[in-house]
Image (cartoon, rainbow, N blue to C red; front, side):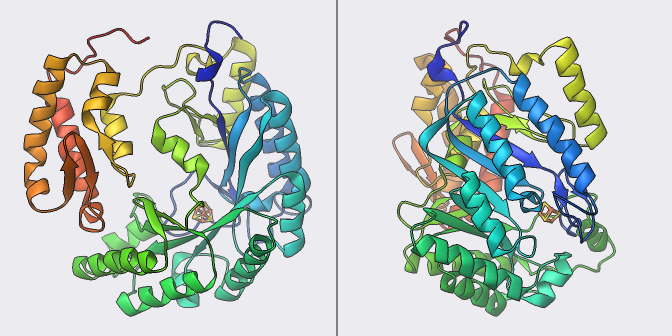
Length: 421
Ligand code: SF4
């Protein structure tokens, strides 16, 4: 296994499937729209999918071998455009290359209206044991405004199928995604969405805020004054309603955007937030096997060219086996503060390599910068353990993280005192 301690090998893999039927109006992901009739096996788009899968398999083949995986996440795009056989062959390849631990969490993102119940059964047979359903809204008018292809009937039907699998013990968990703060929506709309999501019995909910990304239809509409978003006050009310309503239903908010019933947190998500390494495969996918991030090209041709280059000239240095690098302290704070348990600043700083003098000087500076947020009840701290309050602190998390990044940039003494082991 070379010079690397096998304990440091990543145990998680993300696979990106970039194809979608169409691009939603708010989306800036690395996706390839193939048209509403696209399908992984025959018909429109199938050749593009097959050619991409060929390159994806080639990329898995050239990755350094590592430890057996404990989580796999197939995301996109719309991975449910692939047939169960195509998903199965990806999982077989991962299993033969890395191995899969017994009880590994193997998740697939599915988009309503891109599959039927028989496909789900096929995915289960292929080895998927957790599904993440991109619902976004139960309201047909809102779905249309988002440019989504599915309607509320598709969404409810998909929820019923997944809940059936869950209740009968065929899958251990499943997740439903919703977006809050959508144009033209208000608090009564959002309360109704949450009630419907709770009725669907999903044991895990991801509630994202709408982000206006440059280059999307939404950002263009916004610049023309055609996108009416909820006011800041209404957004805050929605945010608070999410937190209190889900808490009443027994959900714990274990990360800013993620809520789960006991025992249903996503193991794969926790890997990203814990700072552990992961493999990434596919167009636009990011990997961080040894602490250094590598994002693959976002367009098909550039991605394919990149694979050919890796095959002929050798691996990108970020992928080669090497001692795991410690993730930079500011990154660890940024990721850690999103979690319910927050961070122990002193412990992170010591692990990062600061000596006691650096810890005292630098951390006291940050504490001073955060003092106003502490006084106003946005940040709780006990000794050096800091966490955002829910919902007040989580609502303004960006502000608190920006303050931290300004602090990080201002430090003259942020290099670790000890060499990286
Ligand atoms: S289905 Fe998801 S990935 Fe595809 S365009 Fe819509 S938001 Fe983006």
